[in-house]
Length: 314
Image (tube, rainbow, N blue to C red; front, side):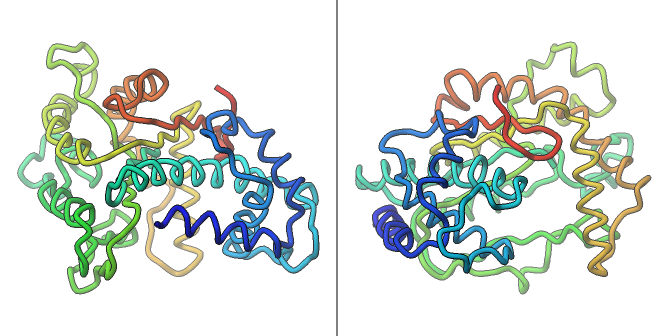
């Protein structure tokens, strides 16, 4: 089983890890997500091994030092790895283990995190001028792709998006450019900025505060076709929605630095502002559900983030 291979692999790597295992676990315990991890907890060797793998993949030059203390790492990098990435990984691994032990197949996990085809037919709706809001996705394609993966099918094409297309406004890549999932997966992650959003009652006063929001709300109910396929959720919650502007600006500047087309600062603000009505309308319900009984009553890990993308206590 995938979960047992992952655990044994980490155990073996932990013995050879350049990270000091006790310091890795001790640092992880200081993070706000540690208390959300289910039993049995990862042991020090697993924290050290997984941390060393992430250090290497993130380009750190500190992975060849014997018994490196976590406290000697760049603090921002250490927080990202041991307070955010690894707690989410170990929480998801536990969900996979539970399904595997019950004889189930691949596990589908929804990941909700902050981040035009309809514009021609709906020119008066400013929220459909750009990609992303409810109503701009091909739901049948998403459902068929997720279902094929969960059935354990092989050779499944995975739709791929190019954020740099159309001057940074984005577009779906041609089918010939889609990667193909050759083997049956163990885990399927469905990530999206509006993943888990639920429609408000049609008479809700919030819907009258922004032009185009009632149409978004009406389209949102159909996304339940994706939600019902998921086994559990991870929700990255922001303490201030204004962070989205800065994060998107950083992404665009990063693309420009690599020579890829992107948007100007003014275009970024105009782009992002079209998502704010949906954020303001649906984030309260998403966060409340995540903190209470879980989205759709399913196991849910709620991660509160600050403007530096660091997990903080709720």
